[in-house]
Image (tube, rainbow, N blue to C red; front, top):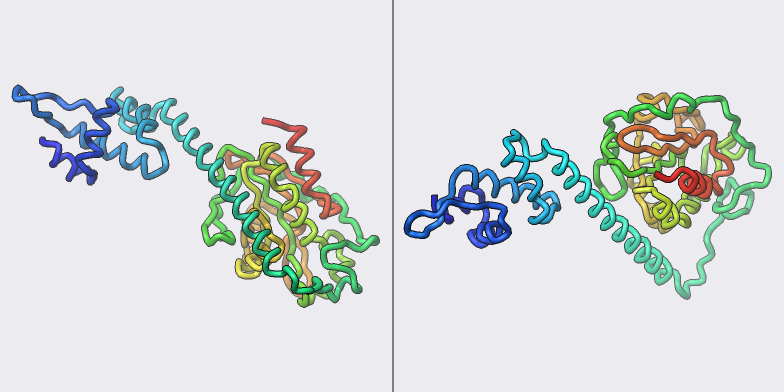
Amino acid sequence: MKISELARRADVTTKAVRYYESLGLITPERLANGYRDYDETDVRLVREIKALHRLGIPVEGTRPFLECLAAGRPHADDCPASLAGYREAIDELTERIEALTARRATLITNLNAAAHRGSGVIPPTHPETGGESYLTLPADLPAPTDNGAADHLPGTQVPPISLLNTAGKEIRLDALGPRRTVIYIYPLTGRPGTDLPEGWNSIPGARGCTPEACGFRDHFQDLLEAGAGRVYGLSSQDTDYQNEVVERLGLPFDMLSDPALGLADTLGLPTFEAGGTRLFKRLTLVIRHGEIEHAFHPVFPPDEHAQQILTWLRENPL
């Protein structure tokens, strides 16, 4: 077939076909008159190049996949070199995401600084704190005890649960990839001017979600450098509420919303009730390759927990 027909059937331009040929990714036969003669194999190769390129794999990076087909494999990703190509593309995308996340955090910080510059507004205090800032913790905060509620988690497969994040995307928890994902799970974050459940300060492990989030914010870049591929906060609060927290605190990472506590029910995570509402108990999961590598529970004090995670990552490098 002619190049125009190949381009039409593969839904690419003739210029793209010539480019693939210049890289040696397709090698059509030559007729006696010198014209190129493409066949069904070339159509399949061009379609494969196009599909992989849409996934973010550079055109030159599709070579191992095409060689896998040329070796007689039914699928382009049946070969070890193809899997390595996937991993390389994933790592490149992760680096780009991390760079964009850092830029987003800087923009949020600049926005908050510009919005409050010269306003003279003093951050409000929370009614539950007795006049103290909602960012601080009472000196007599009761510590939770270790009752073994998370001992079964290390080595457990993560269930195929998808949760909505504050960027509006569904995140599949069992498909987070080979890099370590840190998910700190918390009951709920307070908001200035909004009442917390009655007796919140007296419930061991309940108070401190905002200081904990600020700790992960402040150590975010350190956590990435220590080997965390991504960081998420997770609670049963809805995404709109979580978005307010992300913006107000300038968090450089997204939150995950699990209003039905599906993760708790599936994995047997510890929960408690306050104000007639079932909530997650505070704990943190380190997930890798769809498996829980480590679980931190109980978490105390919450404002120092990000540093505890950072220390563990540094002591347990991959």
